[in-house]
Length: 182
Image (cartoon, rainbow, N blue to C red; front, side, top):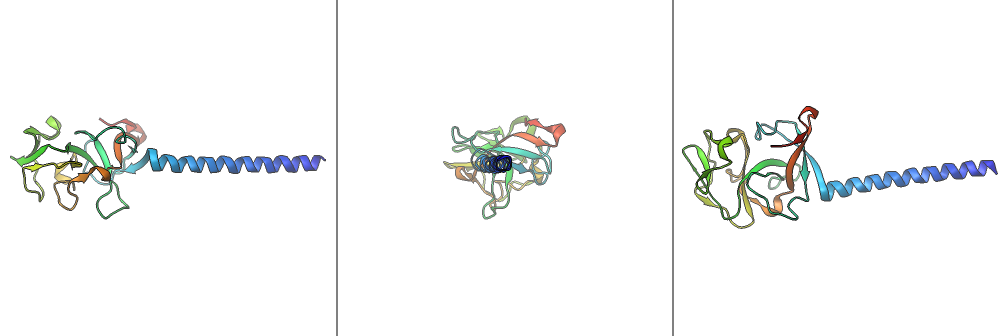
């Protein structure tokens, strides 16, 4: 009788562990599919805001209930490459006019991004400016505009609303830099 009880307890314990692991795996896949994902910043295009190899959380729910705004840092896959995630800042939204002159980008007559980005930009890309942003599209730039592949290059181009995978507001690595991104 004692052997049977021990055998049943062992089997019950094993089943509980299998169920717990299955629930954890299911929760992981639900969270990373619908709620958030972790992205790694690759390169210097978002300096000084984000540095190479920093890890950030992409909030995949952010734009289910609101529209992307100027200043938001977003994640999106480049056209034709599903293995990568680009991280850039929105500088113009649908209906805005973006222009480039005197080595600066302007949105609706104001410096794109404000005083933080009031510095010479060597490359305007291969768009013809001024450019009016169509409905459902966004113009994105890296914060390090002299070292960024972004909307000014036709290979990336304007970002359609459906391309945006989420908004980035939190850095999780390195630990000494963990927290809200400003």
